[in-house]
Length: 215
Picture: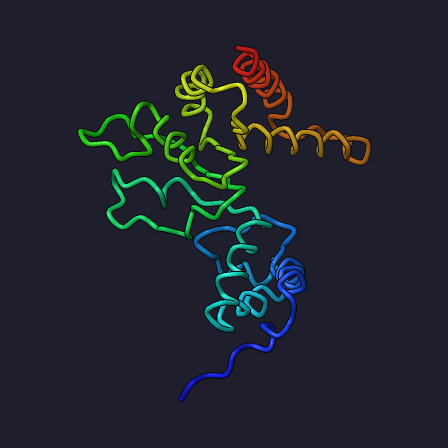
């Protein structure tokens, strides 16, 4: 029995594209692989994505729009094959425009390195540069030590026109917590344990981060 075509195909192509953009665009970054908390973070996520299963033509059109209007995040641990024999291949990366790689920590102490860890982690950027539609790439380091070891080497090889952002989330989160504690300082007369030491450490880390950025 031949399945009937989707009613969407009766609409003009421009209108179908607008429908895809409205139903498949999300405010937050989409984590891959999909976590159990995604349904709570994005209400209607599963229902909207089921549009990709309407029919073959609708699936192709909607998949292009889905990858075009959304930002995606994947952990470096799911990409690296140095120790992970079963890496996660999250999507057709050739369609992605905005991608964030979290927990970036290249391996350098293994006899055989994967394509991403190769060349002190610059292999990741080489691989990402081959994606035809990629317009923005964020690389979030896993910790301060990996940032200090690899960030200067990678930044030295950046092309000025490359839209690549290097991040250190732990520093950002620490600053945010410190700011929140400062805001509530008037409500709480007691100083938090280790607050002064934490503040000095953050000032030092901020100085180091600014030094890397300038160089």
